[in-house]
Image 1 (spheres, rainbow, N blue to C red):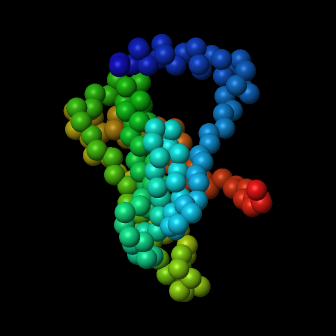
Image 2 (image 1 turned 135 degrees about the vertical axis):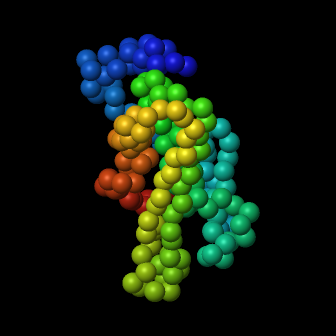
Length: 169
């Protein structure tokens, strides 16, 4: 796909959102079912069923997916799609590229071993390694716009309010 094809594909969508801002508000959903016999949750991904469980550092077997890994994978996926879309829109040729994310956790927090240890990632590092002949100023613009438009990055960075409820069924 080139920049013209991307613009043509997105033009009617952008026009609709300009004329009807409410149409741009979409609720994405994720659902899971608690496993009856294991400490695990079966998550519906839309394409397959993914089973998340405890990380080995908290006693898990390592056979199930770790939700922390899944968060980083979602960041990599979103950032990868975003950088590719922005590069396409700006006519920045990328011969190839890799996106990686890593995050630091202190598992004492999630296990309740130390009250002063945080629960959650203390730091996340997102990295893009691209093979391109584009000048540095274009790469700087590419990174800036990728950060601006990457949904998962912005969500992690901004920390939106999260409403949590529990109900009997």
